[in-house]
Length: 226
Image 1 (tube, rainbow, N blue to C red):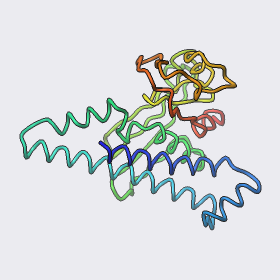
Image 2: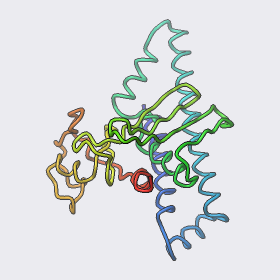
Image 3: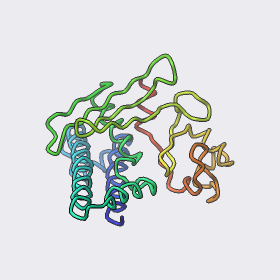
């Protein structure tokens, strides 16, 4: 479980750095590129993003195979039960909101609503942004390894509109910043870091999820552009 947590932290850290570089401009961008040895800013950033996708897919495959092998050898379901525990504790790398940020980041840089990456070393990946006139049909769909389907609903559960200035809570649910602040009973200018530890997610009612909430800049930019 500690290993899964560390892998998730690694992905979060790397994606956050990519997003920061993408939204940095002027002298700070130049200095950041210089210190991080970016020879071609856009191409290098895209390669780094694809490498992170490789890392996520590789770990998803490895974890599944290890747990299946464990259950087969011991004739049990402890492996699959362990995966369920990881998901319940939001430690499954496929549940990370940073994965959604990474996908939005790649779509933004490629200026396309969909991408198909069939030549990934550890399996194929495709993702598609579907914005319809009906709010309920607005989703970002990911298909990992050619068959595992992940969907991110882009509708705020509170205002029932496309998320604006989206934030993801630790439980994975995504809200508009203003809606999340309203639910946590904090001012927008204060931000979610001032939310009480007892504040609960409006969807799953889990407490303590406002801590380490993720500002989803790439997803917000993607929706703004579309």
